[in-house]
Length: 246
Image 1 (cartoon, rainbow, N blue to C red):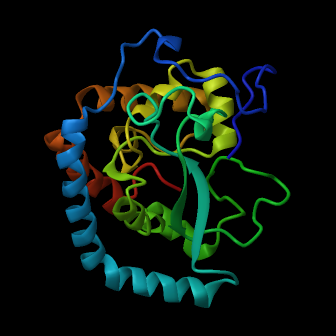
Image 2 (tube, helix red, strand yellow):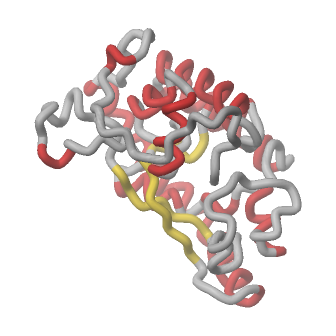
Image 3 (cartoon, rainbow, N blue to C red):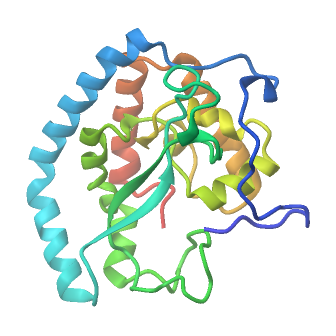
């Protein structure tokens, strides 16, 4: 998705300088390694249970996608993941000399768009009555069913159940030029759902993104087992009543 231009100063390039925690006025925010050691097993257990419970739904969704539109059932896309350089890598690590905000990974989804849907428009924000989205895809998005394959990302360690939503590298590059605290979101493992997602609908402007960043940083400041469980339970009515999605 593309970022609406509030000004003409957005630079379409990947910034080359490293993201230092001193780049922003916020205090250092990073999940302690001790907490992450128990959070990962908990996330794996939840993902396994969720996969078991939703496997019949995923099977039906896969058949419907195949029957209603041409193209593959699944869709993958590069996203910016967890930035662990401060604890896992040194600043001169050759694998991380080009800073894109975090370790990239492939996110999995059920396909909700027509194939080659963005060949004319490029990446743009989702919108109501989006012509790129299939008839079935509208329902998958409204009920967040297209996100179910990301349970595999949780098992792989790319994501947690709860955390900031990961963004595309090119869009990440644009947003951190516009929003000072945006890179701080990468100090937590990305999530399928999050505090921002249960409090706000899909993005339609930079102000929406700024509000979500506030929620994401609030979550990072107080992340923990009970906070994750609270957000998971708050996600249920968001999904059932199709809040904030289109």
